[in-house]
Image (tube, rainbow, N blue to C red; front, top):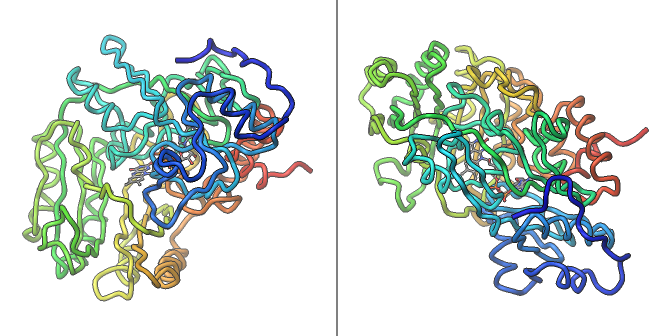
Length: 472
Ligand SMILES: Cc1cc2nc3c(=O)[nH]c(=O)nc-3n(C[C@H](O)[C@H](O)[C@H](O)COP(=O)(O)OP(=O)(O)OC[C@H]3O[C@@H](n4cnc5c(N)ncnc54)[C@H](O)[C@@H]3O)c2cc1C
């Protein structure tokens, strides 16, 4: 699939003729505006975001990516990257986009408990390939998300408290840096890149594949409890206390939801405010059952799906929608969620509040997330104990309203919030994105590495941290 580590691609002639012609001569799949493949590869999960690059290169090898970066660099055109479109916020107007969909190699090595995963692979494929061996990849709430996009943002999933940050399980990356080189980044080879690719998103390179450690896990005791509107305040208060007492084998979150009628959503959950308590227990199921008994016993839930299930079905716990929607998202990190904080949240987003958000969820973090497994990473939110994430559905004419409402909640949480964010959840793009995703010292180190590996500033991701940390 790729050249040997550190190999250089053939030199690119100085820019002459058109960018499109130079790309077409060097790589097999170049898609231009107006073609069906261009439209398909630039589609995103957020119907409000429509990238408009000058060209899309559908990479079939690391060599294609390296050639693309070198050619675009020679023309002075920046390069972005897209996989599934689950997290794309930038329009990348006028840039070249490398689409990774065709980098779909997936090899599970059961004896080594690892998988080699191409940059176009989604989590659901890894779950299916690993399950027959009793192995699991640490995905996020939605298995439709791309493996590499998720891992480069750190990756805080439904096993975060028991198994830690997903990026901690990356053994190595194959990556094309902005100077057009194919490199191998691991603890022993290019350790600075290895640091920055785990949490730094696409700032330092376009990853073409990862070597990922899998964990031994066939089943989890997991699912959701759904509570009716009248019970939301009491159950959120109970959950906030209960979740602080939960051992690290348990990962949990609570989402206040206002669901419109949607396919796959039972009518008894729509048209009102409900609370979904998610629970994943990786220890002894009998102990997990004891743990969740405290939540089950307070009031009768509308629905209860918590049971022993194959890990391969982990996506059913959050049951994230798979269809593209027009949406705005925001999130806030919290150090603490004490009883006063819960009341604050209920006032801002509970039943009877003025909110128009589709979902306001609180994830309990901490546990194994706080303990790096393979040295330090660029993911800087390890010690945040909670985070609040909200999604607003934007119907025609409601964009301002939804954004203002999200701002109201963010401002209302400010007294209990801490600075920073989870790189995978920071919505805006540009230097503002980098400011929220990375503390100043992390951004400075990423910017310095970007200048080393991408002297001409070809990669869009690197430009964002460089803007934030300009040279004196
Ligand atoms: C329904 C849903 C559920 C989610 N749940 C979680 C969750 O539980 N935990 C969590 O941590 N995140 C979660 N996320 C966020 C998700 O991890 C990010 O949006 C992630 O960036 C998506 O990656 P992608 O490749 O699928 O998307 P894309 O939109 O294709 O890519 C998004 C970004 O990922 C980076 N990227 C993608 N491919 C590469 C590459 N080859 N090299 C370098 N950088 C690359 C780039 O910065 C790119 O802009 C969720 C998102 C959605 C939509």
